[in-house]
Image (cartoon, rainbow, N blue to C red; front, side, top):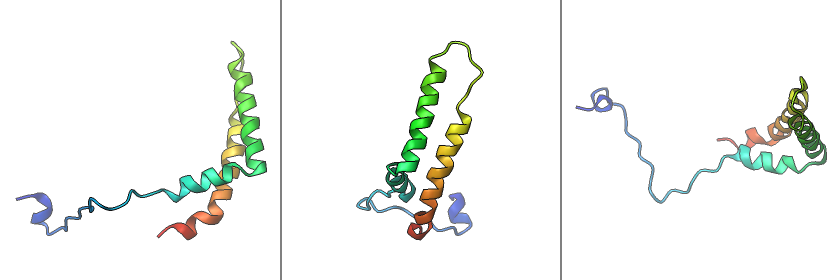
Length: 86
């Protein structure tokens, strides 16, 4: 006897015709990405990344730029995300 049947746990199966689920966070991130201040933070991060990758020896990293970008993106997404969750 299967483990889940022994303890009476229900078995749930997805319908084959069911649509693929879409993560609302991904859609909101794409939408927020195009906002001016977030786009400029991303560009600043990319410029830093290009500068660091263009050098052979450097102690510089782009963590501050990355954190600024991700924090602002998450802040934008948070305004709408929880209203879309079930």
